[in-house]
Image (cartoon, rainbow, N blue to C red; front, top):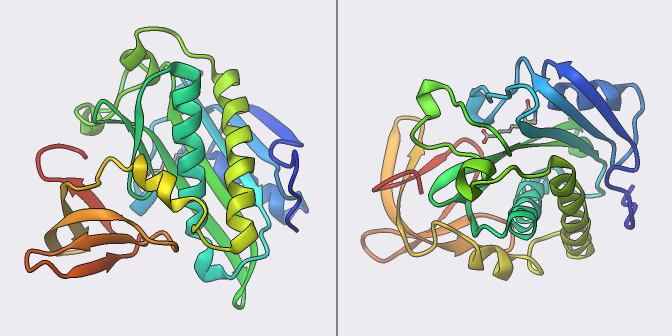
Length: 257
Ligand code: BTN
């Protein structure tokens, strides 16, 4: 199903406390929930990040939310939804706070070089068919304390803007932007209508990045994404290479970005 208008958050379920909103959306999907369901929690006790990391989600300080999508696309294209969600998060953050936000490929939103938001996309398949996709978005809104291991790289909208930011406004703005970009994505099943805007807001663009793929590390210059969301990079010999998001981590040479 690809309901187009007003599908995001047609139904929203709120929790004071939960293990992970991504896990709850999966449970809801198994119980028959539909496209566009959103789960929001005040606090996550087992918030999950990419690459098996945990996601710090202290009570009331952030927008910890996940939503259910049932797109009519092939499983191999589901990772592009992360790019769609990143665009929506970046735009929502800019329009609600007036801060300048950039995207660190593929799925982090950074403000002043610090990570403000992360996105975790998970899918459940049946053969080559997608049964459903869960997109989890964590935005450090009014967060003021971070675990030791991310203290240097993370920040919140309140820290960066110097004022309290409304989670409700961010949620509403995210939903509007997500529906707009989702429609563009679904209309051609790739990112051709989104990639120029994404690349304009790409924090890594033109910068040297270290691609960490398991034990392997290589240094290249980021160029931008292509229409399927892969990062195009130039290696030291000037050849253009492609990096797929899967399990790689991208770090700047002189900082997080
Ligand atoms: C990352 O940058 O590693 C992705 C972080 C994703 C965090 C969000 S918070 C809401 C949702 N529930 C989770 O358990 N994770 C995502």
